[in-house]
Amino acid sequence: MTKKPHLYELLICRSLLDDDVLQCLEAYFEQPANVAMQYEFAARLIDAAEELGLKGNLLRAYLLYRLANNDNIVARCVEMTKGKISPSLRAAFVHDLEVLEPLLRELPSQFLTISLLNDYEPGEDKMTPGVAALHSVFRHPWTPAKLADALTEYYLRFGCGDISAYRAFRWDDETGLVGIRHFEPIRFTDLIGYMDQKKQLQSNTLAFLAGRPANNVLLVGARGTGKSSSVKALANEYYSMGLRLVQITKPQLAGLPHIMDTLRRFASKHFILFLDDLSFEDTEVEYKYLKSAIEGGVESRPDNVLIYATSNRRHLIKETWRDRASGQDELYKSESMNETISLSDRFGLIINYRSPNQNEYLAIIDYHLRANGVILPPEELRILGQRWEMEHSGRNGRTAHQFVAHYLGQMKEEKTKALQE
Image (cartoon, rainbow, N blue to C red; front, side):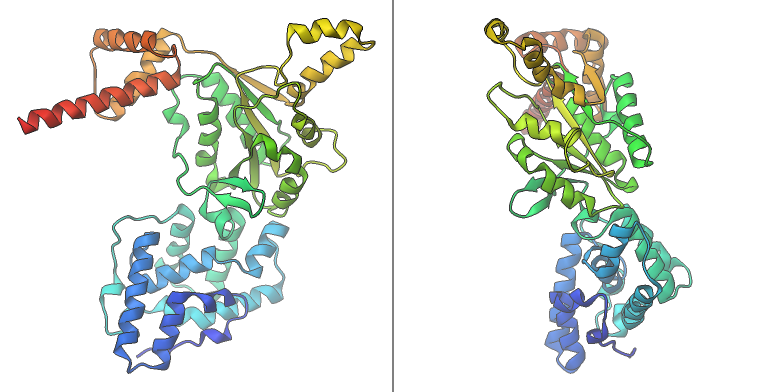
C-alpha cells in the first residue's frame, strides 16, 4: 500500500483539515483495520461526486476541486497583486502539494479496497473550464511545483472560492457577495437582431477587460427588447476572462462606496455592477449616490469596476410638466432642470434599444422554435405571431419568447393526448 500522507503537515491549505470528507479519510488512515470507516469515506466521496459533478479518479478530482475553491493565502495574494507571490510563499505552497502528492498521484484503490472510485462517472458532469484545465496537468509527467504554478494561474484567471464558482452575484448588505447558483445561461447568439447594440456593448466590455479606457453604460429603450439579457450574456461570454456580474438594487446605492471597496480587493477580476430597470421619482435621493459613484466622488471608482444600468426611460429621474411650471418661481430654473438630466449624462455610453419590426419579431420566434426542433411554414408563422402580438403586450422579444413557450407547451400537450388515445 502507498505511503499515507499526514494532512496536519499542511501550511497553506490547512482549510482541508476542516473538510468532512478528508477528515473521514484521515480517520481511516489512523485505523486501517476499521473497514466501516473505509466505506464511510467512500460513501461521502460519492455524495460529493454527485453534488459537484466530479468524475474519473474521485480522490484526485475531489482534492483538486477543494484546492481550486477553498480559500488560502496564495489565492488571496494572487488576487491582490495580480499574480505576484513571493518565492517563500511559493515554496510553502509546493510543500503542501508534496504532502498531498500521494493522494493526487495514485488511484484510490492504492489506499482502499474499493476500485469503484478509480474511474467514476457522475449523473451530471459539472466540471468548469478552469478546473478542467487543472486536470490537464496530470496528462503529462508532473511535479508538485508544476501543479503549484498551474493553481496560481488558475487563481489569477478564475479566482478562488465563490469568485471562481459563480459568474454572477447579488449584493447582500449583511454578508456581501452572494453567488447566484442558477444564473441564466444566455449567450449573445440567443439574442436575435440588435447587432449594432451588441457590438457597442461587447466592444466597451472588451476594452474594460483589456485595461483600456471604457465607459459606464446605460441601456435604454422599449420593454422586452433584450437590454437585461444583453448584460447577462456578457457574464457568460467573458467569465473565463475574469468578468463577474454583481446585481445591486436601488436601496443599496447608499452603500456603493463599501461595495466598490470590497470589489477593489479582487484586483485580478473585473466587475460590472448591474442596476436593472433603473428610474427614480423626483422625491428619491438615491440617485445622488449613483452620480457620486460614477463621477465626482471623493474616492475614485476602482479600475476593475464599471456600472451598467438598464431603463425604459432616457432621463432616469422623473420630471413632469407640473415640475417645469412650478419652476417658474425658482430663480435658477435651468440648474434644477440640469439636475434631473445630469445622471443620464454620467453614463459615457448610452445604447438605445427600439422595438423590433415585424420581420425581426418573427425571426426571434422562428429562431427559438427551430432551437426546439420546430419549423413552421412562413405564412403560419406570420399569422400565429401576429395574432399573439395583438392579444398581448405588443411586439418585442419578451412577447416572442412567451409565444414560443405557449406554442411548445400546447404542442406537447397535443402529443400527450394523442399517445393516450
